[in-house]
Length: 125
Image (cartoon, rainbow, N blue to C red; front, side, top):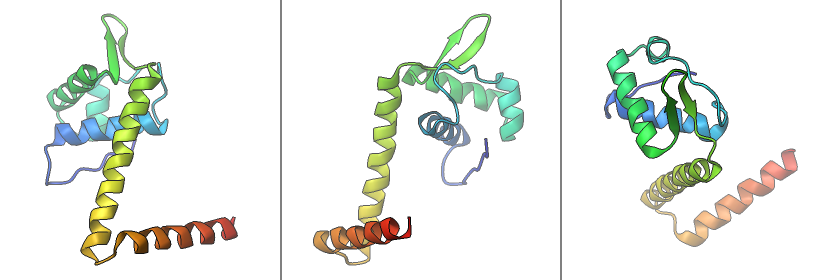
């Protein structure tokens, strides 16, 4: 996984977000065993305690679960994965609409721009 961090948010919460994104995008498959805390921390370049905190939050959210002697696994509950995927989509849409409104676009203009873009992409494929 390609770990990238920003300075505007705590590292553990960015880890949570990036792992969730990996799960909903299929980089981590349902039921897949995750690497150890130490290995994931080393790969991400963070302290193992920070990675542990992120994984604990993911457990609380139902995105991963732990088996005492076998490690942590990605949830197989597709409802949980779909719910998180929907949340990511809503955040992206909200961010996009906010940016377009700051540029001065009205709802109808945004819809027109999206339609034009979709037509161009369909013509290119």
